[in-house]
Length: 96
Image (tube, rainbow, N blue to C red):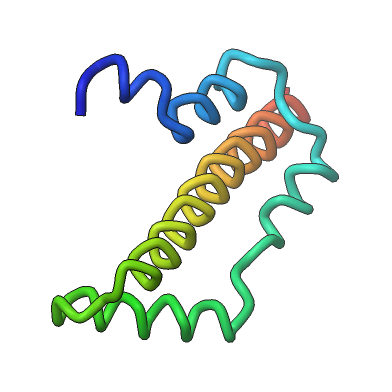
């Protein structure tokens, strides 16, 4: 992947939107983000797709579906990381 592609990928753009230098999230918003998770049916489907992928048996449509799950998971991870940093900063601010 070229530097230009990396800088314009969905994840690179989202990282800039959720920049660590930006103001922190409210504690309420951070806790709400940390409660977000894939539904059990989605986790089961991701596991099925991952197993088929490891076996080299994904169809093109399944590969696209798996990639969608991966992108959503990455976005959720970025948002939840910001949420954890926000809560940590709020706890530190209360103790000072």
